[in-house]
Length: 363
Ligand code: 5AD
Image (tube, rainbow, N blue to C red; front, top):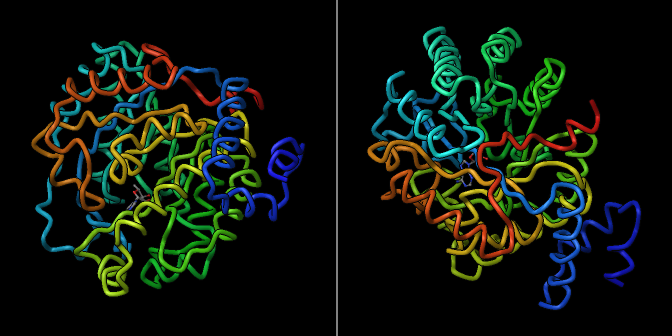
C-alpha cells in the first residue's frame, strides 16, 4: 500500500492524509527514504545556510500563540542599530554563509521601513553584494515590498500559519490586522514583484487535523510557492494559546513527541509532493528534539537557518519557550551545525546563495 502511493505520479488529498498518518517505524523509513531520494534528485545533498538575524522584537500584532505578541508585557523590547546589523552581516560574509535572513516583530511605521531598507543596503555593502537576503518582516504594503526588493532583498518568507480559515481565526484576534484573506493576498503581491516566495505553517496546533495539514501542502502547490519554512507548534507559556494548551494538559512529553514527528512527516510529504522547492529544517524542530534539524535534513529539508543574532538579544527573541542556542555565539552555532550536516551525509553549500530550484525552473 505505502509503496504504491510513494510511486504514484500525482498524490490525492487522501494519499497525503495517509502518508501524514503513518506511524510504524518501517513505513516511516520508507517515507523518509523516498523524500531524501527526491531531494537528491532535485536539490542535491547540499544544505544552504541562511544566517538568521533577529533584529527587533517590537510587534504590532497580537497572534495568540507567539511569545513576542504585542500584549506580552513580560518581554523586554529591543531594536538593534545599523552597526549591529553590519557586524552580524560581516560575520556571515567572513564565514562564507551564502545568505542571511532578516527577521523581526512586525511594524509598518516609516522608521521601521526606512531602517529595514538601510539594513538591506548595509548587508549588501559589507559583503560586496555577495550575501543573498531573505526577509521575514510580515505584512507590508506593496510599495514597501518593492522598496525592499529594489534595495537588494530577493526572497521573502510569509507564513500562512494554517490554511484553515476557521483555525486561523481561533489563533488570531478577529480584526483587520489579522486577516487570513489579507495574508493570502500579500503572498500573491510578493510573487508579482519578483521575490522568491516562501510560506509555511505551524504543525500540531490545537484543533488542527491531519486533513488540515494535507490541505496546507496542497495550498503550497496551488500558490506555486518556491520555499517552505514550517515547524511544530511549541508552547509559549505567557500567551493565550499556551495557557489553553496547558489547561488541556496538551504539552506532555507524548504530545510534544507527536508534534515533532508530525513536523518531520510534513517535511517529507511536502518534499515528495512539491519536489524542487527549498525546505528549511527549522529551529523549532530542534527545540523539541536535540537531533531535530538532522532528522529534518534526512526527511528532505535542504535549508538551515543558523541563528547569528548577537548573543545578548537571543533571550529576548523568544517566539516560544525553550528556544535552542540561546546561550550560544554565532561561532559556536557554525561549528555545531556543520558537523550535524555531515553526520547525515550532506554537505554545506558555503559561499553560495542556494536559490530555490523551483524558482529557477519556472523562469
Ligand atoms: N510555536 C512555533 N512557531 C511559532 N511561531 C510563532 N510562535 C510560535 C510558536 N509558539 C512562528 C510563526 C511565525 C514564525 C516567525 O514563528 O509561524 O510565522
